[in-house]
Image (cartoon, rainbow, N blue to C red):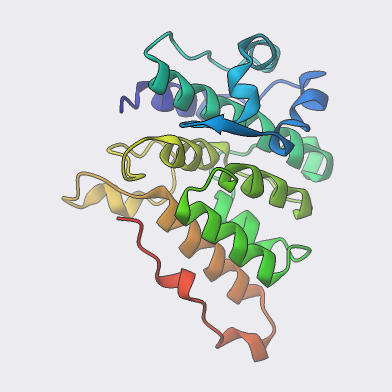
Length: 224
């Protein structure tokens, strides 16, 4: 699966925030409508008029035309970035949902204290399974986050990885996070594994002492 658009989108997000606009009102609805075919994890990915209109208003780069399966991954990734930005914006510092080198998506989930441990675990299990509901559940969990940014490049990577037809791995890491893995000889990496680890480490770091020793099987999940 070609990762050129993922790189283009992340490079843009390195320099720019999604531009404010009325698109955010529409994007708030997207996570409540999951997709209905392989690769389309959000229904709006089947609606280029709405999706590309929002992306243009937000000044995000549009995906190129390509074959059907690749297009579904591109469009789902774009939709996830826009939806995550819209969901976090109302409670984000200065109304800016995106911050380069801000917390990754796992850290945001782990720190969201209004998201219960049970709900967090279910969300991570859905991600690992790459179920049809995984991306909608991930995004809706962001409604429980308060006073935080997210680095949207990490949202793009996990959305891209779970939408692909393969094993959920990527050959590039344009996120600006988890950079230790790019210095190894490994040719591929699994964004979902890093999100799971990041979420649980953050949750336990913020947990009361009585809960710190509790472990969950998801901490050790490998999607390789």
